[in-house]
Length: 134
Image (cartoon, rainbow, N blue to C red; front, side, top):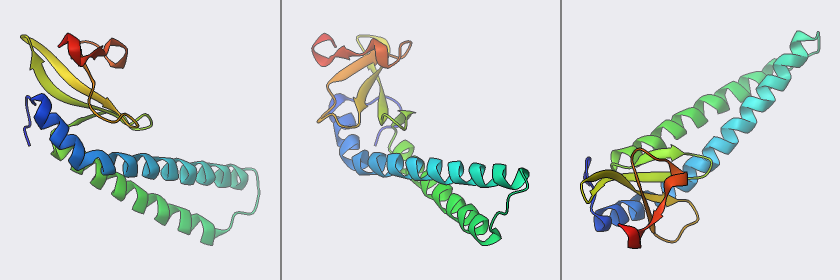
């Protein structure tokens, strides 16, 4: 896969390869956030002289490490395909390109069927334009 400029067909081919990893990364991030929230709650209780189960803390720390490793692996598979992750929660993925001499991105968001948008690299998601304007 290209690491610099993608044609639209190349971006679509890369998307087919990474679409599942994007969904997995979103789920992993949500699970990681839940573990961190529970750890924070347990630590607050401990600081307030509450009794915190050492066993549960160990389990959560282990789970946090495993989820972090999984997230890093998924991020590597996505970026290794040349895509740029712009937002995990929304599944925002950009593929670098040049359109009519302008540095740009082919833009995709989780839930969309196909790449149907692009935007100049100087703008973000709010600057998305339909492919017909490319």
